[in-house]
Image (cartoon, rainbow, N blue to C red; front, side, top):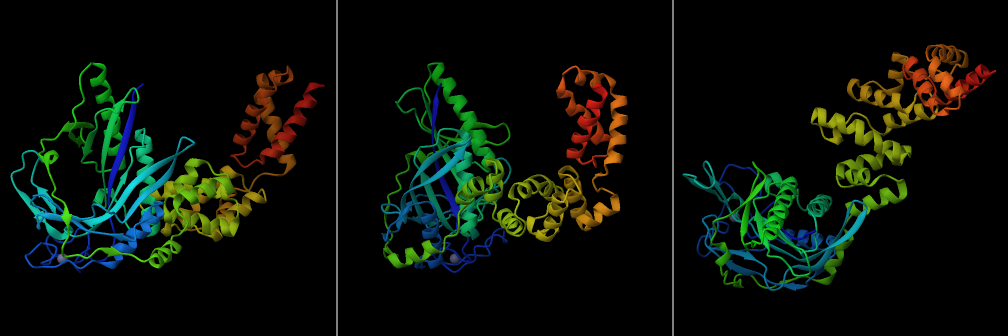
Length: 479
Ligand SMILES: [Zn+2]
């Protein structure tokens, strides 16, 4: 077996209202080149002024990633030529990043694993090139400088990731943390989170040749590109060929990676300290104050849901990672208790409803009062859990209360013993073979018979009572 070694380099746009070094708006998808000024289009003589909010967000994210925050860090110029980089250099951090030496603990397939973070630094985004037609043979390129100077946090992991699933989960958790902190939307589709991956495979302790993959537009693309690349590199090695150290481009259409014709590899960025910005000095008090503002994070929430409420990992993660979901979930269980039942209703019925309608969970017309009513109906054995699911589906769509629906549709459980007994007698007559089998010692068929009674009652029979009466009736047949 070849073991993959994977490292991630993530760029996260910070959602400040204005850019990192000027007061232009960071609004996404605005008309091209409407949020620009001499600073962010790099006119000579324009001077950068650091946006304090960027530091606040950066420190917050750094702390959430368990990093050490450097009280003194500095800015550098990274020099390279590209049309969407108006100054001819990017202001970034180099020798001393804002945050370093962190980690995130991820959970995949019941296994906990620590992924170390080498550093997290702040920098400015470039403008955006828009090419007509195919990227390889486009006729015209346009440049939109609205993105130029939007603040970014670059997060670099150590190559601790060993599978596409782990890479996926790391990104999933990171994005969720950014959302809880309110520092980034993490929307990969909108470019608010971008990810490059490094991957090599090897059979022994000797590291394989590292390949970088770019153009990954979704978490799914990251996973697919890694899966493809593991196969490609393994095959090359097995055939006695060599893996070339290069940058490859992921092709969304056919799920493959292709070598990029790029000169970037040879770049010497000639980093030097940014003369227009003083060193960045952050007080310990500021760091501490920000640390206290960090809410319970999704991985902590997930663990709590598993430990305190016995939710499955999947349900705990799905609810905990989406701030609006966990807010909804927690407000309901604070009022009703029953976390397992509520989680189940949310993950199945409510999720279906959201998929169907395209609504957000905040808009779901089934709140804590309605949940309480539904759970009470189950508790008092008026309806079964199965019927309750239908009642919820109906209530959410019709706006009627659960009790109203139960009343109108006559869904109350049949608990009258005589009614149940006559149903059971009928079922026993209709299923003579199973009755004989039962009497001959094959007691497992009881499940089949209970099912038949439930079916006859339209799901409304009380299953406990059915069981009890059914056993009694079967015993009378024995004599
Ligand atoms: Zn500007």
